[in-house]
Amino acid sequence: MKIKIMKPGAAVTMECEEMKAEEMFKDFTAKMLGIERTGKDGRSRKQAAPVSTPQANKPVPSLVKTPEIAPAQAAAEGAGSSDHKNSDAHSGFLYIKCDHCGAERAYCQKAPSEYSICKRCGSRTYFTEPLKQILLSCECGQRSRYLTNMTDDMFDIQCIDCGSPVAVKYNQKSKRYETIR
Image 1 (cartoon, helix red, strand yellow):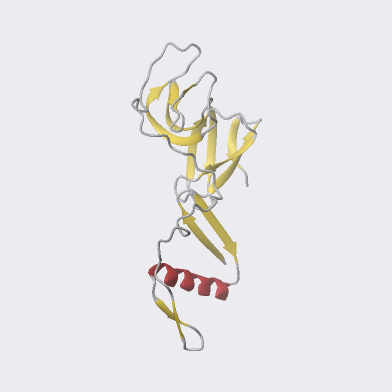
Image 2: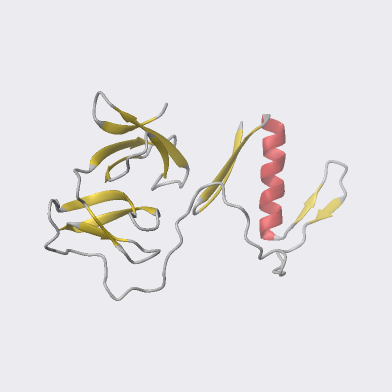
């Protein structure tokens, strides 16, 4: 049986036997709710209520790469036309890597645009080459389709539904990125 703990930007899955998984689930639930649990011997095992201490607020290393977001920008992400040559305007779900800082992000571009504005550094990444298609199939059943400017042979994308990382690899034959099974 699997135990999975998720939060936006990170997920951990652990395989264990059914009885142990059930016990762990009860312990986690009791700990989160700050309630008292009784052990097999009948004694009460008091769970402390969650306490906010400076040590508890330390950032935990993330298992999934999450992009940092820059302060509010004056120019909003939207339809934009420029005089940049060899550009194509794209809309829909895009997974774009910033040419300036290397930050990756997935978003929905509602109106056709010839560039993407990075949320981390604020620079524009122009679509100078044709974008490649990504077909993503997560274990949770979510299927997604993106266009990307990535050139890596293989990379991970977070599932839009459950947040788990999904590995994709470029398929030379079909000329698109596909989920690694």
